[in-house]
Image (tube, rainbow, N blue to C red; front, side, top):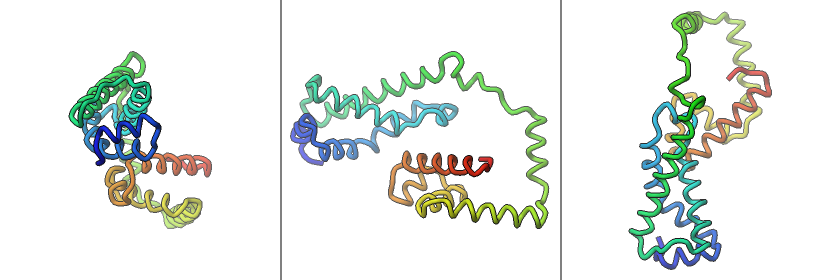
Length: 192
């Protein structure tokens, strides 16, 4: 990473390359910090990468307004940590408020669970298998090659983080692609 003072000065002037360098140099250190404060139940609603992106949006706006007194690399990191913790806790509080609280969600009943296990235990007929494979082939042909690759990895039980690492991209991009695949599936009338 370039000298902190120089990088901050370039960011204040709106230099996108400097902003990207700053973001990339702190991203991997701030993500785990946000993730630790997001419960597993909230993880489906609240993404640590979104929180960190929000941290940097706030930081860059306030930096341009010259609202920070940053003397060195350690000051900068402490500031980013403080903003990350604050934003994460605010988002957690928002998602736990009243009707949004995941602890208020009803668990699947035992009867529904038994029915699902029964459906999963039955073998499909040869006709159903052929129909399914035809539909799957048609669906996969609707997808871009990278979308197909991400879907195939996801179907092999890779997590979004593992897929991102394997493809050299960000977890958030993988999530967006999976969302786009769900949209295509819904347009095709497939249950996801």
